[in-house]
Image 1 (tube, rainbow, N blue to C red):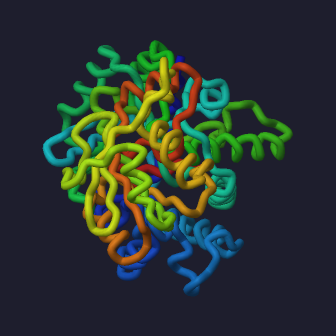
Image 2 (image 1 turned 180 degrees about the vertical axis):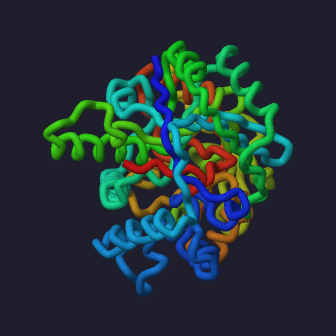
Image 3 (image 1 turned 180 degrees about the horizontal axis):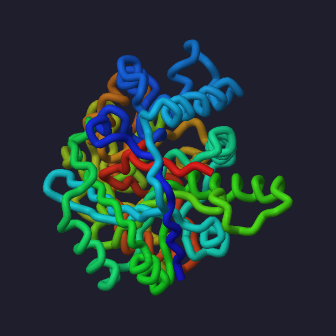
Length: 402
């Protein structure tokens, strides 16, 4: 069963929420961070990406970066930019993008549930990124950004959500990403806590590194606390859990920085490329490849009697093209491959190839939410960067301190 933990959130005044809230730390380039943060001293990017306030070319893993993030957070807390709710609460968070609505429960979840696989992952994390986020958590003594979870639709939970969203929200604004964000506060939390005890599993959608880092930070705090009970706030971290039917996954595309000479001919010999195709694949199993200012289409081979991972397009691409033909055996560490979220469109893939940042781009068909659940339930792992969830949660709406 899943455990919800109400918490006393630090949150902005509704009149200032649009000024303070930001996109997550890992979906934005440093140049974009600078553009947003330079004229807005209260934007939450000063906490999640504090290198923006340090000299150019500062190593993002320098001690000064973590110290600056903690300093910036304390300024928001002590300067009354964020104020703390008086009693532990649960919140309902709704996002509306291009006519689609998804509504979830915003609360803390248990590190123990993550460690014991009540909260299931579907991909591996990078140690360097784990280290980075763990240091941010420990230095700030806070979980500054929520993770995105999903669960199999539950009628009782949905009824409770619907009751809350009939009321006026605390926040209702359109952010820079043109997504409308709404938030409600629930002080009578017991019905939600009871409902989630009937939900057997939660699944990580977006935020694998934040989950792992919360677990590592809690272990560190436990080690240093002689009077550890398990009820300390560091044992819990903030998350928004959405029903599966609300989730929207976009493609997570790839670019390859360097390809061998005559690679296009080799692809054609191996896979019988189609010419003049749509940059966006129309069905599972198909990909579109951009080389020399031209889009080509191909169908990915598949293993005989595949398991739930081997059915995935991202795995088939890895197994039959990236590894054997380009030597990219570990895309988590290989510097010849990078990943581009589907929200940026195929125009971004074309731009990266045309300006010389890459020699080949691969446009993928999106992974399905049912595929994610099947892989997680089977205890398997997807290749890295298999899913791009949209819209993204805002950071700085609700901050959890310990």
